[in-house]
Amino acid sequence: MIHVPSWMVAAALLVVLSMTGDAHVGPFVTAMSALLIASVSANQETRFARLLSRSRFVIMGGASYSLYLFHQPVHFAITRWIGNDKALVALQYPTLLILSVVVFLRFEEPVRECVRARAGMKPSAIGQVAEQLNPGTTSAEAAPGKLSAHR
Picture 1 (cartoon, helix red, strand yellow):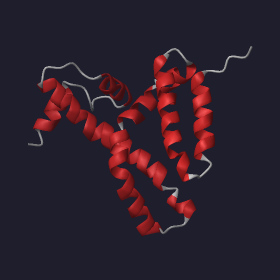
Picture 2 (picture 1 turned 90 degrees about the horizontal axis):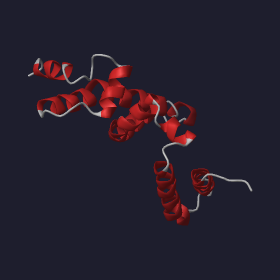
Picture 3 (picture 1 turned 135 degrees about the vertical axis):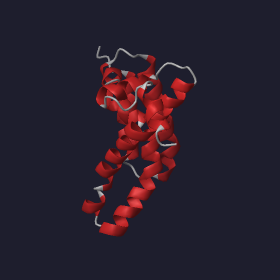
Picture 4 (picture 1 turned 90 degrees about the vertical axis):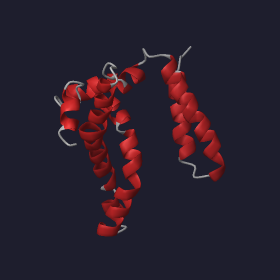
């Protein structure tokens, strides 16, 4: 008997349902997304979970709020300056990823670590990953000095 992991089934259903274009499929896609997240988080020893635990993916997860904040302004800026040509509008995705990671590593995470240091908390796990990728910008010792210089 062939054993197919539940996350793989949920991911396949999610992809197939997303490609239908039917508006009534939305709630089902949402439910499948929730099942996919639940199945991956239930077993941290899967290859998929280990893949998502790599530092690049952890940083992208941390930068997701910046990505959320910048996605509309970047889209409008690119369509206004370049036009609506689909090939050129595709530039918004790498631009958005780069911008959100830079804002996360250079602003959001150092501020968060400064607040944690002043509150007497230990550095966050994502701060430690960010520190490995970008030394000297997010450590709890360096962040307060950086911020206090800008007062």
